[in-house]
Length: 263
Length: 265
View 1 (cartoon, rainbow over the protein chains, first blue to last red):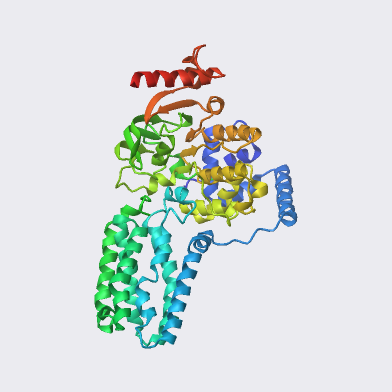
View 2 (view 1 turned 60 degrees about the vertical axis):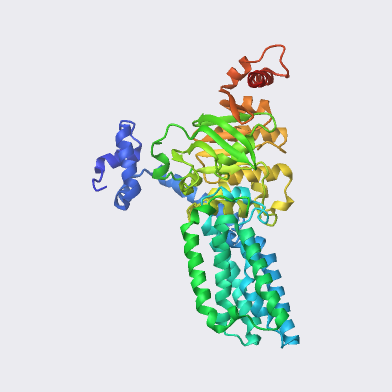
């Protein structure tokens, strides 16, 4: 607003003149909210008793702040929830990968379990990210605007941020390049979310993990050969699969707005 | 006092905060809400009905947790169909489920702030809004206590605090008075009337007396259908001397149910 109120009007407003009609009072007040110059001019016209009252209030507020309890330190509550629901599952995943690394040390002739388990390592964490069984407050959470794919991706990011470093440490001794460890892992994560738009993330993660165990882990342990899927040449195919699954998920993002019974 | 945003003071462009037409919602395989017509505007509405009448399923559908399987549901002027974008509607919702789950290791304040964050409130407004909500339910002294240390009634009040933290235009409370002692129930009624001045509040309860005392409007459902909607006085007027119940409202309630069952049979 560019039309500053007349100085005389401001003075009458400061005095609390009952003759000033309501419409003028409103227009003065709404102007004062946005105009520092007029507030300064108003201060010049304010009677002494108002100044005294303001000083009294300000002293009172200062005293209250000084004597009151100190503000509690703020913690990011959005992060704390991940600690609550994801921490046990991530601990378990890390422990399993640790055991796999130990086994590799004991039986160096067998294909490394770390390499075999790397693709499915994030799945337990992903499965519990958007799940009515592991989240006690699922019903209130499911009715909020943030609920949906965004929440699921946040949780998945936390899962990957923990699982990838663990994989990197556990996989260092296998001598396999990082790309061979990580691209299948990303592809499986993306695939479980993509399949989750159809049957629910929990079922999708469990199904994919079971399929991987039966079709790849068991045969390769039986034959003591590293499967062709996990040779360095397969990385490009895994990357393509990951991108395709991500694209499919984005196209069907609305399926996560409500928690289905599959989750 | 708090600053009102332009969106809050803008006139509503819809006639009904909650508008359901021939609404059908499934609870598992069972059609728990079956052809319900409901129109609700600002005020406190009490949702009554016998066990298994579909109250909780209706509440879940209104809270956009369950997908309606048939009919039309419009909340705050926006259709809430299966493929609708629910974000805008959900920002204006507050919901206390019947089985209120919480994170035991969160403090009350952390939980309410977390819910405020989930409801996409502006970051800077969250601490003050959480404090205000906690004060309104009378939990100030317990604000920094862990949720697992609270009694049943206090957990319920924390649940009400998370529901009202975003000053919702539609507030859905499923059995909010369970576990509250008589004095807290009186405070709660006052809070309801306070919130009901400018929002649409729907309270599901099995206590007919709560409804008569705190609600401007009674909604009676049975077997997934609307049986009666009107003022508490109109409910009482339906009761006759011979009907079951200790008060006029209870007699009206049982008379209406009996008539509805008779008509259906």
